[in-house]
Image 1 (cartoon, one colour):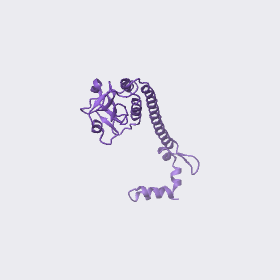
Image 2 (cartoon, one colour; image 1 turned 45 degrees about the horizontal axis):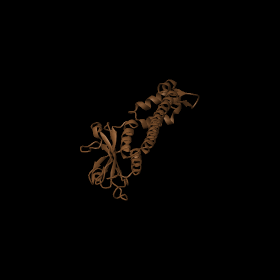
Image 3 (cartoon, one colour; image 1 turned 90 degrees about the vertical axis):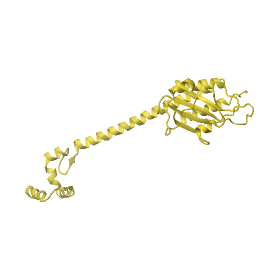
Image 4 (cartoon, rainbow, N blue to C red; image 1 turned 30 degrees about the vertical axis):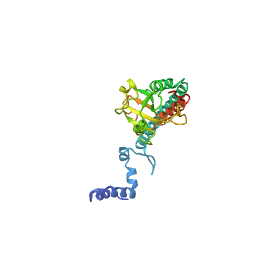
Length: 236
């Protein structure tokens, strides 16, 4: 084993480099183990011959890891609670809609559940012409749904845009919207044909509906509206 003088000469011979220091410590481990004051300064605790307890250094790392895991768990739990609450409100809203007595009542109930249960600015049902449009629904010209969603588009989520006159007075509060394509069979002159329609939702928040957002819940509500609307024919 090298003496302290030999060790000093070794490190004084040239500028220190970690690979050299590491190799020297591997070759002379007892020198570090015998220097208790140095071990304590770097947060290590000697515990018997050839045993080093990592003490504060290890404990600090463990505490940091535990804190990260706790934060991640809290975030997952928060998201799960929010999703469960949203699903519960969606199911209750579906029951409200299925209790509608006619087309006009269905539109009124949709707007009410959008505001009361989801905190939205409003909701509306739009139906393409020609053909009758129920009271409380919005009329669209032929091709209006494709003009908003594209020829094969099913949904559109994003900022409110000019010319989307679906929400009446509540349209002034709309900052973002969700549009869901529907095709209800509403009877009338050609009951076998489905008429292009929209279920529209408006949010007063700019990030209320965004392109990257999932639309499963609003799409589910739209399907409930679509099927419920088919209970009654539209009489021209």
